[in-house]
Image (cartoon, rainbow, N blue to C red; front, top):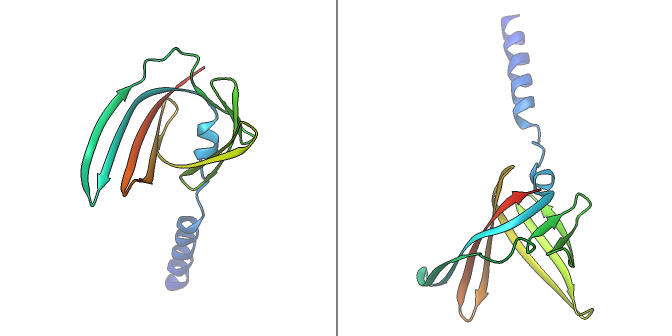
Length: 138
C-alpha cells in the first residue's frame, strides 16, 4: 500500500512538472516602448571588430506600440505585424508598398518596465550584433 501511495505521489509531481508553462511574452510585450541605449557590435571569427553604444536621444514620439492582435506601429505612423514564438519576435512591415521587410529578434529580457531585443545577422563576412533596450511608458 505504501508503494502505491508513493507511486501516485510521484506521478502527480511529474505530471505538474511536465505541464507546459504559458508563454508570457505575447502578453508582456503589449503596450508602448520607448528606445533606450543600443549596443552595436561587429564580430568576425569570434573577435569583436567594432563595439559602440548608442544613446537614443530622439523625441518621445519615436517609439514602438505592440497591440494584442499582432499588429503594431513605429512612431504612430509606420504599421507592422508581429508574431512571437517562444522567445523569438518576428516583425514584418511593408515598405513603399513594394518590399516586405522582415526581422527576427530574440527577446533577451522583458518585464513590466524594460525589454531588451537581441539581433544577430550576417554582414559583409561578419556578424552584426545589436542589443536594443526599451522602456515601457503609457
